[in-house]
Length: 369
Image (cartoon, rainbow, N blue to C red):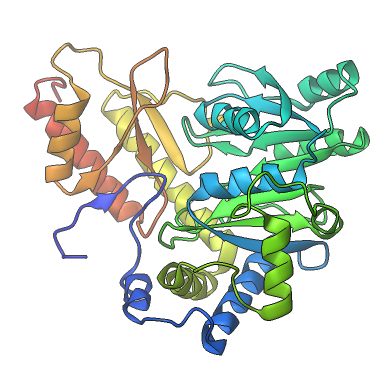
């Protein structure tokens, strides 16, 4: 990355360290023992983050996080299963679309984009429909930054004897989850988020018994996690060409994750980034979409200025010219933009980003500050 490259204040891809980028400079043989050891070490470290080594397998899969979500649904939900999809944003809707496309029966429960799903909602829905076999939840909905109450919902699902699939794409590695206290069949994440790797690798933590019983479930050869794990377990190799450079980059990013202090330190840095951002934007008169109580320290959605001189494309390009890439809003009812708090960034970067935003809005004659 050239020195003048902008900082990515997005939910992934995100700004990575020089060490992580440097790790991609070496070419790996995909069947070579050294690369197989790298993959095995990667899975071991990932399992440790959520205390899952005794109960779950880590199954990596080529592709973005959405590939891993589809693989988890297709592998772990039997063809006669029924998924209750909990929705309060775009990624819940995408999960429901996956169920539809791959032919899994599903129903949805949708709340407003600023309203978390509650355990009481789930309890009521499971009592009302005994056909439901699995519940799918987005832990942190990236379209707004909202945090759903995972532990409470997981407890209710377990009481009903149902199985939980967690999309933890934007939370894994920064928000605590303990597999021994939060019962789940699958937790899904990816390389290019809070672990600060590069995109291209998804992974699924699948309950050992559920994965063992999933043979023949999957709609797809490439997406079959049971077959992927069985082959890797037997040979140490990936079934099909692995993203070798992405694996190496994530392995290096995990070394830095441990050096930083693991999940508590990563969470603290992101929380400080988020608070710095919220405080600075509030001083500019820019309101966050979510109340602080349900705001995850991953990405923050802000109401766009109502001034007619504000146009997101112009705003985006001018902020980029000052060194920061933001994200457009993903809401349907109100105009917003999003600012990420994750990646190889700190509070100094967040202060600089707020200053860049303020300068651009003054130049656009949107703010008089």
